[in-house]
Length: 509
Image 1 (cartoon, helix red, strand yellow):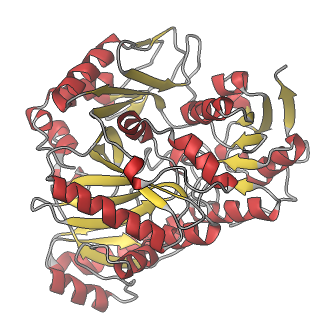
Image 2 (image 1 turned 120 degrees about the vertical axis):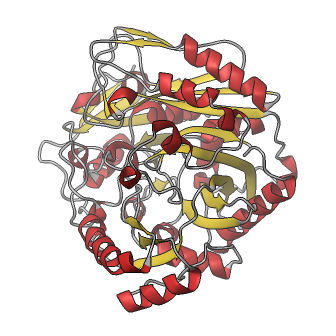
């Protein structure tokens, strides 16, 4: 196993990786911005390195500074968590060029799967079912019209390089298509530096189901069951559960098996998820593969007893997978709720501030992943995720009751601070959700937005709001500058471009 791992992230995921490393006897280095100098991950790390100011593009998205921090501290590997540089193939390649192990798939695999059109073609060849539509990108509106006419309206125009819920437009009639096609290409060029688009059938009121996979570098792989993440707002997941409820066992088995087959077919290594839409007839349609640990991984850990972050580290070290499929047992039901510092009464606007009260829930089979504490300043510079509350129970009804009890206990307060807890409890009480009849349209129905503001239900949500770089930034060459510090366009940052002052390091004794 590695002697020392650098954690290139912040917040609860940095703390989660740190704890996994500590249990394995691995020393940790946490990089941080000036805004996070007093954060819990920094306090608990064996070493901490300040790599820049609050703006993400000058700290957590600064590949050069992160690599130099690893060099200075003697780290052997870099764990990127989720978001930031976690799915940046260029960063993974830079790590390899500098003798560092990137905890994730090989750069060429990440690059292929980041292109939605390429990923669709690869998965189609592997036998995974796709939504009706084009496998390749469509360079002319005439080709887009031909595909749309073939699959039938409504359709959705998607950017091949899209991510974060951006770069997609729902089209409900042939008359709308030319303008939507042009608008989507233009937006994709600005956001991702790539105007290629494709067209597929728009699947309304579908379930969003994903499969956790774990693969090594020796051709071995297992799936760890399914998760349902249909409760989402503007493509941000809010509540997730494992296993996906109210689906036939044959459907669950099939989607898990094809997901693993697809991942192995492209040489995937590490922990990742294969995402699908499941329609009313329980037909599964491939969406994408995420090449990282996900926010909702605790629910899979709770029903399998498997520490996914530790398994990531073993795989990255080159160890053959320690699990066989027959070793994986799914027990009970786990449900996770994200607690974001946002105000549901103001269209979920960020509501940061200093925490004067912070008392997470406890009790049987209740897990809280958080970096919050009394006195912690929730920064406006980063994603609003403050905590994840996950519970386990033998059955779904008991898990829902336990989660509601836990959320009722969660006491968070401070000047100007609001959280999404009240809205989450509203979801838990919704009759359709309680009966597991909900789809991706659930939150839209509860919020009842104007029709022209309604989110598209078929696009895969990300692990964070699209506008916030802190969790789900795209590779640096393909991100729109964000006033709070998103990455700037321009491609790979040379390792020689470390800030003149250099990283600042201290060690815990």
